Length: 321
Image 1: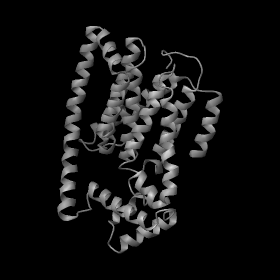
Image 2: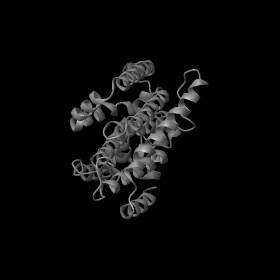
Image 3: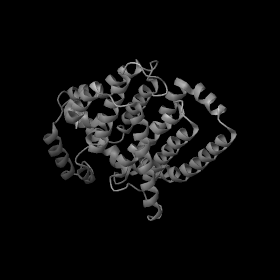
Image 4: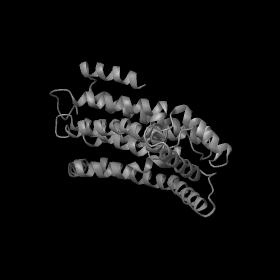
């Protein structure tokens, strides 16, 4: 995937895609994810849904695409009908994430909201006030309905989180979702301290984790996740040490540096979409090894490469941005 993304980025630098491909592509992905989730949820009696893939990357990707669609709807000059279509697709992406029950991705939403409010919150509010009353009433109805639905889906997951934390704190229980993660993070840090510069390597880490499982020092469920330790940073530190961390951080920091310089240019909204993508994926990686998953790695590389290519275009305007 990284090699293919590099070739794609070079090609896009010469023939950059139109920014509309980002907005409507994200909207299509979010809408399809939402529709599939609602269809699956209707026959599952309220269980977590994933539309045929692991629920965590599915929920995170749905959330990211939904936020990008909403960003396109709220911060570009569009006809009300176009904005409504993008907003509807964005809401469907959020619904898909809620139905997946993926808690780790939800923590990124406050950070994204603060970024957008600091960037153009006043302009967004003025644009909202200029909408016809009917559109605003419809918007409020959708917001209230989404909030009620979110509360119903999030509350049980938060209760589970608190219960898992209590059981881990009181009993050292690692058989829960949270307990297993804490066990893997503790192990990752201990292994990093043993080999801080170069880490254990791919094969070496797998063998050491297997040894710890056989010795009863790590929950055996860790082997069912391909020996990835559910944190991009901690997994990298254990696997490749500080040298590996030095290759991981630029994947986030270099795009941020390049995109921040474009926030006042003609494609400022695309630049913000790229920043939002980086921040969300960095947040996803706090509780999941996102860059070791082929779906999320591919999505990150394509979205970041695409936004960087788009903001590198000369000319254009906010209508296209």
